[in-house]
Image (cartoon, rainbow, N blue to C red; front, side):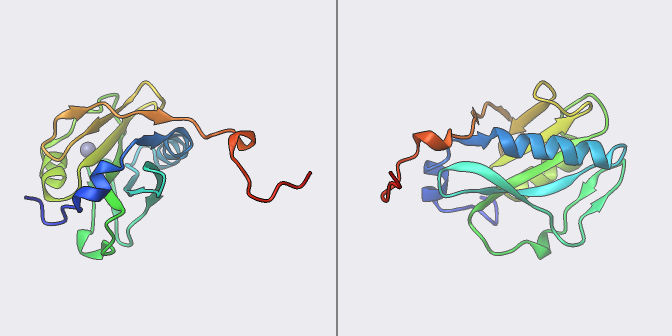
Length: 149
Ligand SMILES: [Zn+2]
C-alpha cells in the first residue's frame, strides 16, 4: 500500500482530466524545455483533475524531476503527479516508477513536443491507463438558481 493512499471516496469520483489543464501543462512543459516540468495533480470537486500544484523545492533538470514529497501538503485531493520528458518518449524511467509506487494513483508523463498525442497516464504500478479528457462545459448549459431575465 502506498503511504499516501487516498480514501476510496476520492478514487470513486474520478472522471478524467480537464482539457484546459492539459493545455496549461503543455505550455509549462514547452517553457521548461529542455528541462523537465513537474507538479502534483489535484482532483476537483467535479471529479476532474483540474489543477496542478508545484511543490516548493521541486528540482527540474534534463535528467529527472525530483519531487520534494516531504513538502507535499496533507491533502487527499492530490492524487498523483505530472512531469514532462524532453524526449519524444512518454515512458516512465526507473526513478519515475519508484515515485509512482510511493505516492498517488494517476501519473501523467508529457513527452516532447508536448501535445495531445504525446502524453500518457500511468497508475501507481506503472501500468498505462486510459483517462478521459473532458472539455469544459459551455456556460450556457449550467443552471442558475437566480436567472437575470
Ligand atoms: Zn520521467
